[in-house]
Image (cartoon, rainbow, N blue to C red; front, side, top):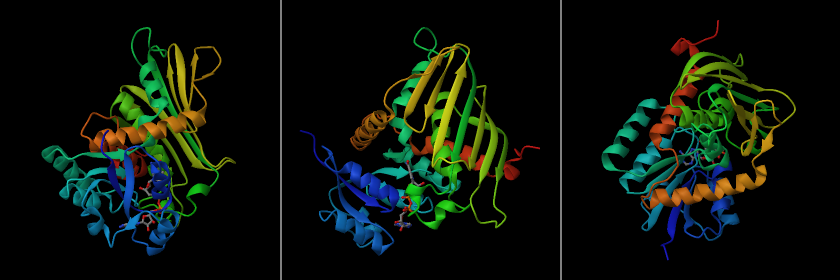
Length: 333
Ligand SMILES: NC(=O)c1ccc[n+]([C@@H]2O[C@H](COP(=O)([O-])OP(=O)(O)OC[C@H]3O[C@@H](n4cnc5c(N)ncnc54)[C@H](O)[C@@H]3O)[C@@H](O)[C@H]2O)c1
């Protein structure tokens, strides 16, 4: 039987808790060590999972003998420093997205990963989704592919409030312009899918709307991208009645395929009705189980489908170009 893989978790907020719950009872991955800069978060976690051990600090956690991997679920700012410390200790790193807002630090980490053969991936949950696989299949040339010639892409997001209710307990960073906002938090997942399918996207035009206080995250974003020669439009805003609306559509000469509300996948031939590829809740569960399988493969040094740091940085560069069109000269006029 394959050996148990001990995992340390740094960052015990909304995402850290979700990952701890998913790891419960996993055949190979077992969370053993935790740490958070907030002692209350550590105390809450130990109360819920008495079996876990709290480290004295991040350095002590990373140095724990027997650890195989570090999962980083802090806000973006410490992601690179924690990753580098984990590489120093020979740990495989699974880091939350967004990779970082410090592009220079990310480039150094990427060079180091390549130079030293470090194992590192970023947690884009759609990487192990049936939706991504279905889109990849639909884009195949020949009878397998259902789309014909790809003509356009569309991404639409709407949130009744930002942050969304399930993230209400997250830190203030999530609603601030420096590190948070729905473009980094949510749109990044769909830019990841787009770029995995079609290669690097170029921002043709972007209009983010920011609150007047100069501090709050964007409240709307309209943009045009081009990826693989295909125009892709983005419409996203805080507004409407639903907590979390997201939809990504690829339209071809012979049909369309769509991701809806994360894990739902729908297809139709031109002129026909939409067909669901499965119950979204089941597809979500399957994706989450598969994500852990991929993480095991990362630790074991085997091939896996999780995005590496370079792929995640390419997503982040597109995201930051969308958020800062005055810097990149892509503002809509
Ligand atoms: N993959 C996904 O689907 C998904 C979903 C939600 C959030 N995220 C990402 O996960 C990360 C965490 O988000 P969250 O919603 O859990 O945020 P959160 O604010 O709920 O939790 C962050 C935790 O990190 C701790 N922390 C902050 N700085 C730290 C440091 N230097 N060292 C140790 N702990 C530190 C905070 O005390 C807090 O407990 C973010 O990067 C976010 O974008 C990913």
